[in-house]
Length: 141
Image (cartoon, rainbow, N blue to C red):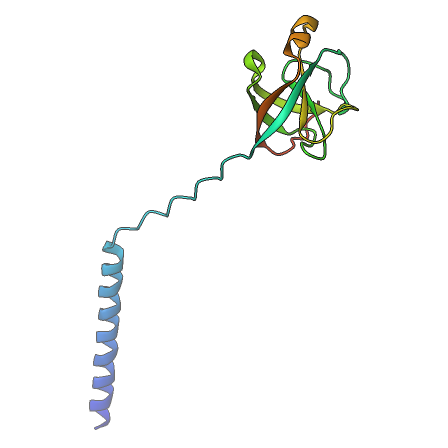
């Protein structure tokens, strides 16, 4: 009787091992599923602003030198280093980095740096759409 119990236990063990091997082969033959695609990033925020232009050369409030592609904004709305796209500014539409703040800039206002005095005067004051492309970038001016 004891021999029968050992033999039946051994047989059950061998069947269990064989079953695990078969299960592993079945799992291995199932092709892996592709990871789900990441959710699309939300669209950058777009806001209505009033734009003006300035031509004063020199250092900005952030310490950077004035140059093409720099603008001034209210740091409470657009912190220094923010990358923005300006639409509706005619030939001055494009990507800017906020590096300056002006005493008269408050809320949703931006002041685009334009090196040519006559072009800055012609620019005047106009409504624009500002799209925030990225958070503030802290670089070396």
